[in-house]
Amino acid sequence: MQQRAKRAFWAPIMAFALASVVSLSVAGEKNLSQDKAAVVNGSVITQADLEREMAGAQRRLSGMGKPLDDAQLVEIKKKAIERLIERELLYQESQKKGIKVDEAAVNEQFETLKKRFPSEAELKNALTKMNMSEPNVKSQFARGMAIQKFIDNELVQKITVSDKEIKTYYDSNPDFFRQSEQVRASHILIKVDPQAEESQKAEARKALEKIQLKLKEGDDFSALAKESSQCPSSAKGGDLSYFKRGQMAKPFEDAAFALKPGEVSDIVETRFGYHLIKVVDKKPKSMIPYQDVKDRLGQYLKQEKARKEVSLYLEKLKQEAKIERFLAEER
Image 1 (spheres, rainbow, N blue to C red):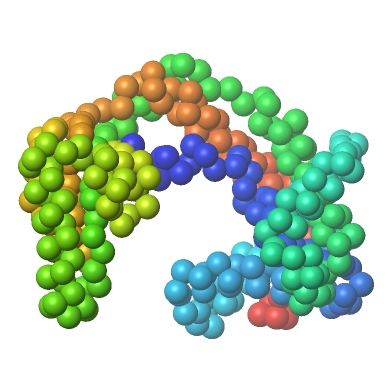
Image 2: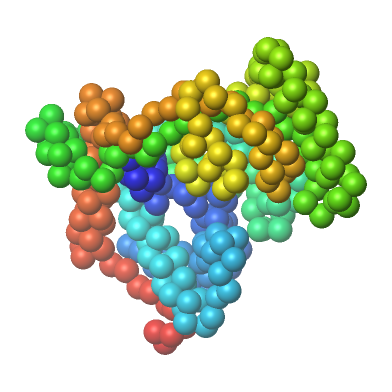
């Protein structure tokens, strides 16, 4: 199946609504700034809230190595304020429905956050840099959990996906479910830096040639890998499990895919060093059977329906709400 479909299977149903809570790019304490970025049915979203939301988006894009120009920053700001407005609207609706969040669940969420930091001091330092406090973070977790509970109760639980819909999607999108040829291989690696001197390379190759001779004399590949391989896979007898093309260094995969199960390659050089490769099994190109993906595909289709339902619901809320935006370019 294509990567896009695979990722969607496991994506949280409402990740876009809660992602900022998890990353701490969330609305901050309301007394941090009196400058208004927006007002939603009387509730103020401050410039400080907006700056945090933008900072989270900018970090994500910068992490992808994308330099941001002025036009992109304007677009980020527009999207950030809309996300804040949408979360505020959903939270207001959750409160109208009387949704409560268990304090123990909030504390558990906060403990999970703490584990992402090497120490409590580093967590406090991160919060200080964002003008955040532990009570405020817990408050934001509670808000996010209330939103999620509201969405689940009011929208997601009402969504159904029939077997017919699942099968139709499977039959209509065969490219998503095609499985590439795969090979299962083990290897023995003697490391050498590609920039090493020729004498070092020759020494590494000679060491592997001695192992190769033992194999020809009948020694067990797995035992030799455990004894001599300089790859972490040595603990498993050199087993690399199944892989498809594009996952290994090209000289390595070319050799592996050319072998038949049970065959051992000649010495193969890659940027990691010198290898002996043994192919254990091969799987030809195939379609993933419907029954193998039916349940996950059903989850994916339900998520897609949920996203559409939430988008439509938010549009309805926006039309009915009193929303004032105070972005600089709108003044």
